[in-house]
Image (cartoon, rainbow, N blue to C red):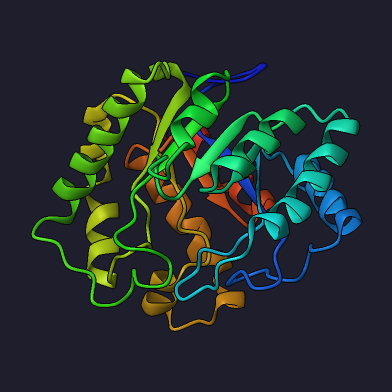
Length: 276
């Protein structure tokens, strides 16, 4: 399986690691750490040294109850970082984590190769923003919005409903001319899901392989891991690595993580002992 992301072609016969780079003051784990361009670039270069395969840059927190930011604020946060990384001639794709079409367009123009959208291109103009490019697109499931998603989320069958939503969004994208080899899907752990929903999704993640698209999983440091271990967000390294390994064993092709080096090494061990 190959994912086409602009000038990059990612061979997904081995699992890939997407490194998180939040240039925000309020993200749930690392908010404020990399809000200055120089700090963000240096962290990105460190992640590359640690073996990251994709850099995911976000300028607006989507944690539960996060306050929205203006278009101008988000652009001011992410575009200088993308431009600086392109100037460094880095050899990994840059992903823009946004749901705003204007940010997508600006990021693509600046050099981003992947759009990672928590709303699966449902915003007006989002599909058009990426359809006439050659970037990759990650479609994620979310019930509600970041402001409402944890207000008593409910499903009859979380796996079936997430799968049906993603299938529908994939069809819409394909009809708009976005080729299948540019698409990947994300079940959206923590986005409108309870502990039971999240655990059920990971247990039955292999059901999503029926969509015949690469699967991205983002469980790093999330609250469900804190609920299981009893640890605060800054003490969830081991749980996050375990979740990444289990996700790959269940069919994930890309894991989105904060702790790149630990995850890369764990996946190397998995590949040596139990190749997928």
